[in-house]
Image 1: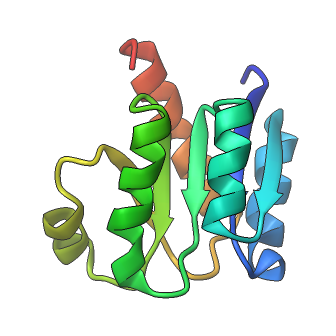
Image 2 (image 1 turned 90 degrees about the vertical axis):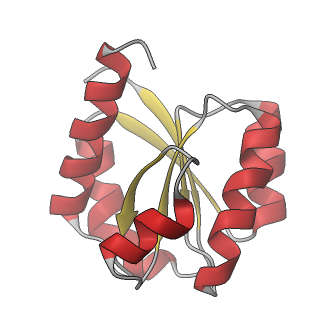
Image 3 (image 1 turned 45 degrees about the horizontal axis):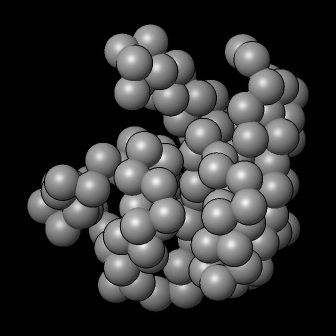
Length: 125
């Protein structure tokens, strides 16, 4: 997989160690920020192919994705949530989020996400 810049917003870097290690193993560059404001600033400086959001409260996710879409509507996103997948789909419909992520995503979720990203990119998205 070609080098991709991925932006990760989290205040819990330890929960992402295996996930990030897998992304890096697959040739991705991961830039980590602690807050949504830092994430938006980093996205303005250099648009990532993918932004991963780990909001402290699930109800912030939709607003945060919309804020990133205002920077670049073509930026792919994935969001940490404990919502049921069907509920997540209903709440986040229309935002183009690649997938929900569990609170402690691991290597398998990273591989699945990269697979989805590859599919979307092959479609020209």
